[in-house]
Length: 170
Image 1 (cartoon, rainbow, N blue to C red):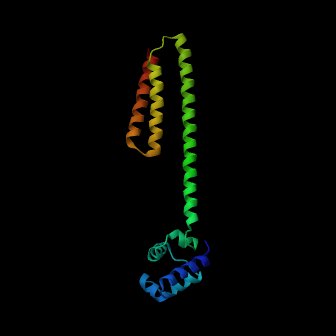
Image 2: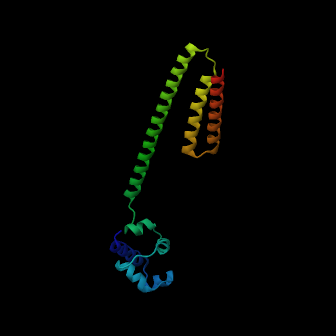
Image 3: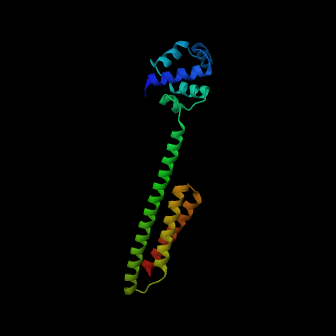
């Protein structure tokens, strides 16, 4: 944080309003000496005063801390960054789904091998589908914070456990 830059920006904002240091101090119920110290960069306003100044000047607190107004380029940069983050999240989700499919394929192959030694009942296949559906619902719930998806995913996992137990017992 550059106190001098912040001070200059505060002075610029005050002058744009067309008021004196004394008038600003009166509006904020502080001493005009405090306003003078802020504008020269000698001291910084505390957090509550930064919020009050931002509201009074109709600017963002970040603009005061940065010592200047946000540019339109900044909004565009934020938008680009958010798009990149969203794209990155999609890639991560695809990778997670790919891993899930690979795990399910491995489990399926193991079940086929087991079925050659033991009569295969539908329980393992149902367990596998329940596990996949449960994982899918829970991952969607984490993304969207939807309570019903957590419940549905949990119920699928319970069904998977019960089917697996039934398969082992038989």
